[in-house]
Length: 194
Image (cartoon, rainbow, N blue to C red):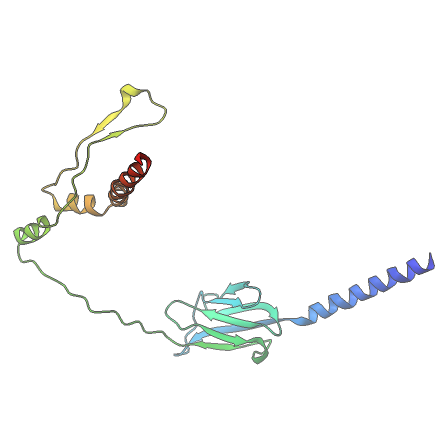
C-alpha cells in the first residue's frame, strides 16, 4: 500500500512539472503587419510552420498568436511576398513585420479590332464545330410519355449563342466523352472479338 502511494505521488508531481514545462515552451506574440510604405496590411495570413495553426491580421494589421519558442511564423498576403520569421527574433509585446510588394508582369496581349459587325461574324463563322446529335432529355421519376425531345444544336446566326455552345462546360464534356467513346469503344469491341 505504501509503495502504491509513493508511485501515485510521483506521477502527480511529474505531471505538474510537465504541464508547467509545456506552458513555458509556448509564447504569445503580438504585432502589426505593415507594407514597405508603412501602411497596415489587413487580412494577412499568419501561420505557425510546425503546427499549421494560424490567424489573420485585423483591419489595422494587428495580430496575436501563441506558438512554440522554436517555431517560425509564416506571413503571407495577396500582392506581397511571403515572409518567414523565427519566433526567437520576435518580442512578446509589439512587433512590426514588413512585407514587400510582389510585382507581377503579364505577358504580351494581342488585341484584334474588327471595324464592322460583318467582319467579326465572318471570322467567327470560320470556326469549325463538331455536329451535335439529337438528344432525349430524361427526367428521372417521370413515366416515358414525359420525355422531351431536345432539338439539334445547329449553328446559330447569333454569335453569342454560338460562343455559348462552343465553350459551355457541358458541351465541352460531351465532346470529350464522344471522342473517348469513339476511340476506346472500338478498340474494346475489337479486343473482345478476338
